[in-house]
Amino acid sequence: AQSVTQLDSHVSVSEGTPVLLRCNYSSSYSPSLFWYVQHPNKGLQLLLKYTSAATLVKGINGFEAEFKKSETSFHLTKPSAHMSDAAEYFCVVADSGGGADGLTFGKGTHLIIQP
Amino acid sequence: EAGVAQSPRYKIIEKRQSVAFWCNPISGHATLYWYQQILGQGPKLLIQFQNNGVVDDSQLPKDRFSAERLKGVDSTLKIQPAKLEDSAVYLCASTRDRIGYEQYFGPGTRLTVT
Image (cartoon, rainbow over all chains, first blue to last red; front, side, top):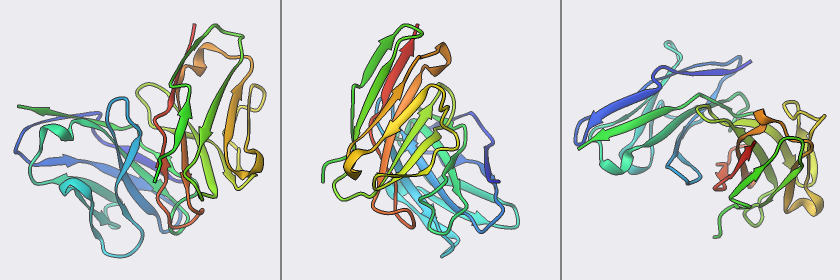
């Protein structure tokens, strides 16, 4: 069975400062991992995905995440927060290689950007 | 290309009534998913179609929920009868195939059961 734990339900940072959203996963197989973003009243959008290639994954809008198997973590980072980054972020795991089947979502982290 | 379309965007019904949601996936996408997102939680997969066949419906409450994807394109999700705990956003997503492709999500239908 697979699961995802997002360690913070809310994260608040000042504009221009770094962002760190934490995610730990559990998977029986080699997992595929994703981060999705959800802006208010909009659909979920894929930020980035890890599928057993490079462990440091770069995504859209300056976000990146590092897969650490020893720590079972896949934390999302961004060097400098922008007001438009305020949204809900979901860490997602899939057991199958390539990962379109069987996605399991975390509960989400609400990112607040202070001016 | 056009995104995943869903309708209606909002629906309010009383408990024990029935309701149906419609989804039109991105053209050419063989795989279609319905998710339920309860307030404060991440989306939970209800059912997955590959073309017009069901791949996974293990988390679909089959006593009240049903879904179909006739002709392997559009899909409808129905709840009959609705309960208060069915209040949620129902998301539809599609992908070109099952493995190795990004899921594209629609804007969702927000259901309120009173």
